Length: 430
Image (cartoon, rainbow, N blue to C red; front, top):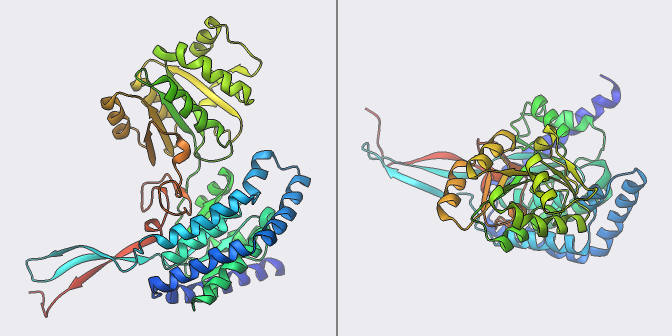
């Protein structure tokens, strides 16, 4: 190992040691202390708006010079709205019920003891993410409220923004008499830092990767620390033959065009053939006006041709399109016979992230809820709602389409575990 790699490994190990020590202090912190820190953080973000945007502008200019695309720049930029959302998210988490120490399902046993479960922090959470500086605040806020310590490894493209944000978080912790080392930002942008983090199970209890598929695949493959993750956001909206047409158009528009570069953006639109002639004309106009390229199946192409709808942005879909996460103004469109074909398509091509149905038929809506095996399933609502903030979690540390421990947007409860507790009065086992 080269001297530089050894130095990085040593640096990350020292950060891990400090985080482990801080996690013990955070685990016993009172709700009042944690909320004090969050309140202080919200005020610091408000007061440092201009400084944050100045630091962020340096990151944005560097990303543009490097040729990063528009979706990337959008994720990176701290607009006034993004800063307001960060502040609101911090305040919302502060207002949430603190799960730590809660004991539930306490049940008396024949022996005379009572047995239940107590919510406790996970410990030290390592978060590896790319271009979104708001993740620095979202992740730290949730970890603080759930009594965890966290190690943040943001992408090099947001380093100036993240350094300033991490400094504000540490100031807020100190103001509440909590250890500043409970939230630490990895200072180096060297990728070796990631390799070091994911091989430190003695200091880090869980890794949460947020970023591109290649990053998450690599971490899931190489990590010696448990990982909470999702790889793809291949999200579907199915417009059922019993859908309200106006509602269907509004939802299908929003699910795709409200933002293109997010994991809960619709990538495939499934349309019941029975209503295709009604819903396609208004939808196609909306998409084409917004510059969305449509990749359509043979049946959809026939329907469009019969309606006289042609355009250079309407192209024939390939087999690969049904498995694509575009994160761009591109949408795959498939006509299906009914709800069964729609659900079969989702089962074969979905990523178990987020899928929605638009229908006025209660029985079919309930079938879709029961039978679609995804982390978030919606009726008559845009897939863009599959988000911790929109779900009332205050913020999210990530989204998981795994089935063990946490699933969907990971908020406070997803950052805790439990221990069995036993209340007795002198019982012994015979």
